[in-house]
Length: 112
Image (cartoon, rainbow, N blue to C red):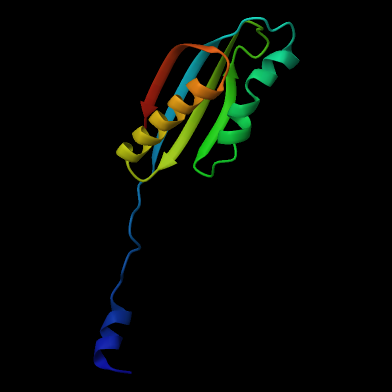
């Protein structure tokens, strides 16, 4: 074994530290014409089907579970930088506005 290789093996190298960033997007929706919970869930099928399968996202209905006229959904995004998370949440919010047939009353964002 060469002296250079021996030096490399003897050095204590700590693995690089990667600090993940988490972004949380909470959307409060107003619904019209939902007569039962099944109709309400159908409005948000695209939200769960499209973004619920993304590896960097977690999607859940977090409030107003039994209400027929409103819904609150939260999307958590994981990334390597707060800028990346912000861009990803912008993209998701715009796509939700286009695909989900419900008025968005309030949007809350938080980067952790």
